[in-house]
Length: 299
DNA sequence: AGTGGGACCTGTCCGC
DNA sequence: TGCGGACAGGTCCCAC
Image (cartoon, rainbow, N blue to C red; front, side):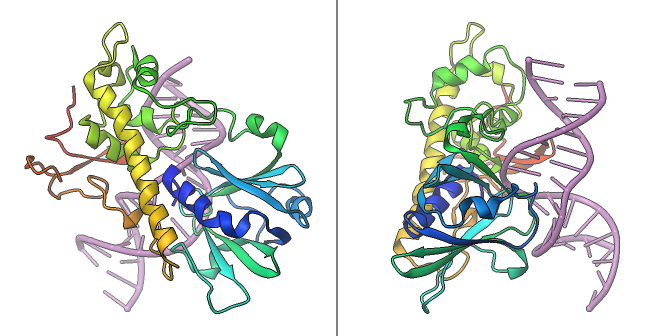
C-alpha cells in the first residue's frame, strides 16, 4: 500500500509501538527482496533502541540510537503489521496475512511488553537499505528525490510556481511528469489519476501547454497544484482516522478503503453531478490512466 | 537530456 | 474445473 499517504499512515500506526522500543532480534526469513538485505543488517541493529520513525516520499525511515537509519520501501505489495505477542489483543493493520510472505520480523521490547512488527510482501518488490544518519541524503535511493509535495522542514513546498518552472517548454505527458519521483516525490499511479481529475486535466496532455510560452502558469496549473496537495492530505486523513479509532481486525486499511473518483472506475459515471461523462481507461507507458473524457481537457 | 519499454515476482480475475 | 493471458499500488536499467 505504498504511495505517500499509505506510507505516512503506516508510519503513524507503527510509531507508538516502535519508537522507544528496543530491537531484541531482527529476524530475516530470506536473503533479500528486490535487493539482497544489507550485509550484517541484523548485527548492526540488534540490541539498539529505535529513536523515531520518519518518512521521505514513499520511504519509511527508522532511526536507531546507534546512528543507523533503516530505509524501508514497501514496493507494490509490501505491508507492515503489528502483533502483540503476549496477549489476546493482537491487532493488524494490513491486508496480507499469508505467512509465506512474512519476510522480516522486528522483535521489539518496550516497557516489559513484547511486540512483533512483521514485514509481508507477496511480490517482493520492496527493499531495505541501511545507512548512517550523516549519509542519509547521499543514499542512492533518496539522493535524487524531488520535493515533498506536502512540504518539508526547510519550507519547500509544492506550488504553482514550482510546477510552472519545471513544465515550461517541455513536451512530456503530465501523467508521466507527475509520476517522476525526481520532480515530485511520493505520488503514484492512483493519486496522479485523482489529482488530474480534480484539476480537469487530461493525463496525456503535454506539460508545456499548462504554462504560457514565457512560463506563466495557466489557471489549470494552479488547480493541479491544489489538487495534488488536497488529494494527498485527504488520503492521509482517511487512513489516519481509521487507525486512531479502531483496532483493525482485518486488512481494510490501505488504498481501497478510499473512494476514488476515477481510479479503477472505468465505465462508471463521472462523480461530478453536472457531468454525464463515463470514466475511461488508457495505457500510458505501460500503466493505466483513468479519466473523465468530458471533464479533463486534452489541450 | 529526456523518453518509453521491459524486467523484477506473485496473486487474482476473467474468458474460453 | 483448468488454463492462459492480462493486470496490479513501484523502481531501476537500458535502449532510442
